[in-house]
Length: 369
Image (cartoon, rainbow, N blue to C red; front, top):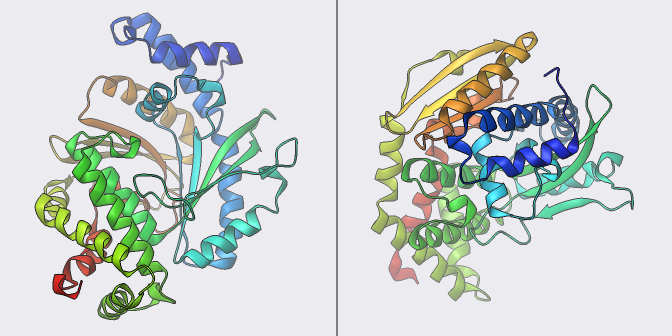
């Protein structure tokens, strides 16, 4: 966007967007949103540079890695500012974010080690900003490794970009939680959901971690995976009681909540009316609009050189969706390696892989405890 705004204006825009009366003051909302859009898209070049580095490093370690990048959605920005009253929009570190999804925890560790060698991740004091949610998961069970780096944009200004490195199973868990949030109107991702759902996801996360502690687990077929997981669950005497209690909690909640049928219903009822998404080969962007009530996803395709038009359409769509809880809008890159649907399964209610591994937990005989 051509017009530039000062840091103070960006901060004030963030404050305006979380004020109680912002949605009733059209002029104030339009200005705040215009500044937010400027600030968000000033991260675009920086995000591209971060993704290029992430791809270069990751593909040397895992040739089958899947990548995704995104600029943080309006709704997510507002929610984060509301959750953290002392946070300023100008200082939010994950306006731009990219992700590598790899096959196992060992490869996550190797990729992180290589990334930390780059100067982009060192601040003025030589310290690296990171969050290791694998060694110390979030309360809700989220696991993954986050690094914050500084990358320059076309104007020579540096922007903070968050890089996430996850395993495939950690990614399946995270996106399934987002699916439940989308369709139930909860905020599990912000620790503001129903307790039974919180306990379900936390216990499933513990069981998935047990699975991933099995050597070469990701290379086996489902029958072999189940057998090895079952053996591991019942053979580890040091933590056997806690592990089994966790598995039983996951199983009980899955059955009581009807998780399997619920997730399958979401997937089946969500009509993907624009098949170009899965077949798209354009180097550019896809504007996705998800209606969780009508259970539809619509898309608009933009070539890379049409990025300004894509940004304008994205901003307009977000403004329209600002007060509609059933509408989710996202602008994602078509350069996503492995396909948009695989990298963003939450927009398609696709929890297939999650359910396959959940069935391992459910099928372990209760009497074995």
